[in-house]
Image (cartoon, rainbow, N blue to C red; front, top):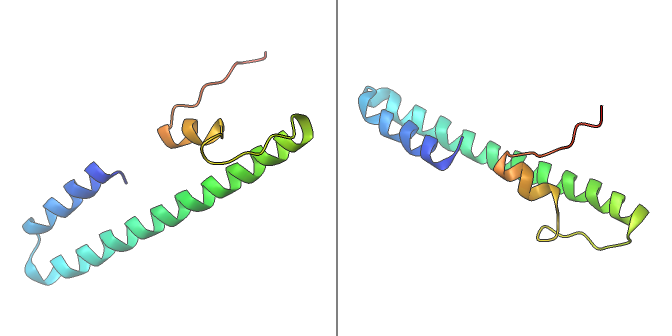
Length: 84
């Protein structure tokens, strides 16, 4: 859920009955925390994978700022060349 989707979800809360607003707010907050934790886990796994590849070829130190894959994955715009 992106930040704009988060704002939309929170704006919908005002249309819920009072008894459901608090529960819905907690569910939204929980979802945002889970998405953030999953994004960090995936980012760490990608960095480890890319570091492994770099160690085998160029011996270059890979960080979040030098990673080629992280920027593509966080923008959700993967580019690739079809080898077939």
